Image (cartoon, rainbow, N blue to C red; front, side):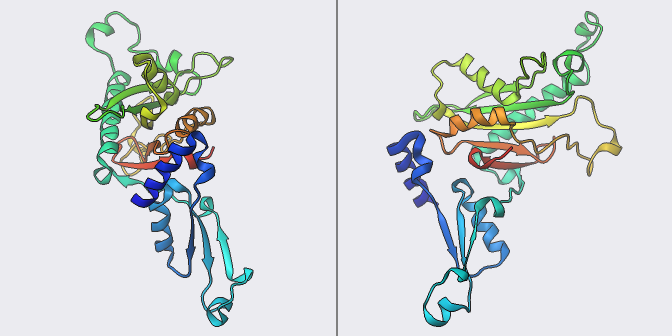
Length: 267
């Protein structure tokens, strides 16, 4: 992997946004169990490798000749699986994003479930999440954007976003794009290369009763991939930043996460 990463970095430096046209990976497999193929696919996932499966005990092995019927081509998308990974096993940078998301979720749930006493005396309702901000779908989505400048020792910067559904004629504003807007509003020197990852979490607008939980956990709409509009934004980031990734979750506890490079998400 380090060798491939160095090659990719050189291609990005040479070709900029066009780098995917100049870097392709194809693996040739003579044999192997499904677990082996899955492991290879997982480790090389950012590069979307295709596979050439050369069957054993056929022409190639018997007479040193390779014919078309001996080879099966398998596209990356047909073999792709995205397993959830326990948070404690994530890379340090990804764990920091998860912890920020947990903090954000706790803040959201505190507002969702009630308001401070001084607000309760002022307003008829503790919030307008259901009645106004999310009145169209009644689905809440939180996003956390991680940014870091390339200078040595630069700190991690987290920016939060949430979906808004104020007016359908002008469209909704998704959590991911909201977070990107907050980041640029806070730092106009922000470059696409500075954006490391975005985490997306679906949360419920009301605390779920026990019979709606899955093994005691609130799944909501998780794992929730970015929508088509957000994908266009995120792919523009990935054009110059191939390490950019999306982090989704199995449920609202954020105990396990799915790390996905934006390049091969589909809608």
